[in-house]
Length: 160
Image (tube, rainbow, N blue to C red; front, side, top):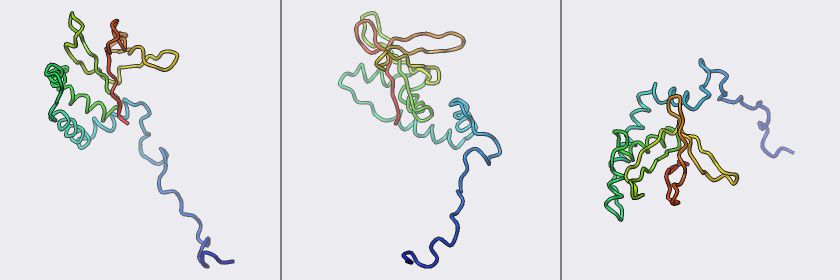
């Protein structure tokens, strides 16, 4: 029976048009840091695109129920705008971490963006984060997910 016409199945299937890591001149970088270095640091177009998106997010107006909270979010973190820093970290790494530094009374006094490639999440037996290990230089610091009063000390922002 000739259901699809006389030319059906006479020509062999076409070969795949793409190959994975086999035909490129240089091997694909395997670590995340190497991928960011290869794709972002050596490409001016990608740098400009990430910068445009991050600056647009940083220039968006911040509305909060408490003016002090709006001031915290709008302030600089390590010399850069907090939202702009978080936006670029989400674009490049898919994760962003913000440490909430409290004053003597326990109220939030400063928000500081942590570099995502230096943060490791430590989970409990059920998989919930209990601490974040931050490594810089040769030393590491364990930041608890919550302070002693049950307030969040580190916020993990994720991109889908």
